Length: 317
Image (cartoon, rainbow, N blue to C red; front, side, top):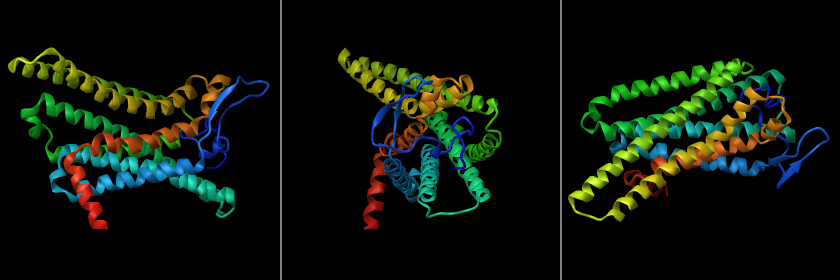
């Protein structure tokens, strides 16, 4: 929130982008190439954050309420919802404070503002790291349930799952604190980009392997029942579509933010890279969209969770 450019801070401040305008336009000057800048209205940013807050609170409430959902997979989904909630809450809080400061409603000392900015940045960074960790954890859990089905309960014992969850929380808080403290070091950005690539590769390898096994299993069942080829192809297309949604949403929502960090390493002063930096608020908005889509992909597809959610909503009325 203090005047920091996107090249100066790890996450940057939302006020490092130009004021929101309701159009998509080209910005030019005499020394820089034309830049395509997508302006995100403050109202849209806040609305997406609030939708994500409500959605993820419902997921956490439903899992906490229904004991049938107290299993490793749903614990990971619940933690993902908690950190998606924190990502949304932190971004909405930062935006709200900035708007209040610009309107002159909120006045505070620079030192207090700096401390608040550091706290919010730690929350945002830690929540992002944790969200990526739990997306990877969900992929690992599904992989074990398919390839080690008979040993699943001995591998994914609840004490072991809780230790993994606590470890992710601790590592996320510590790493985000270090990242914010040493934001001006290239190694910090490199670590974050490497972590994102590692999570992307992990999820891609696991889900592709799971799809291959599922198709192989479907072919075996089809041969057993002497069914025809189109049925296998239909199953394969459905599985490929699911895989595309899982990895596509992950890459499209998180990729631009980490592209931004990569360019900070590779070409922080280049005018073309500067065009990418001007869309930083768009990249944060895409992460908010990820926090909205995650419950739709990982939680609301469960019939048991939907039923519990319906009961929660009916009771609230």
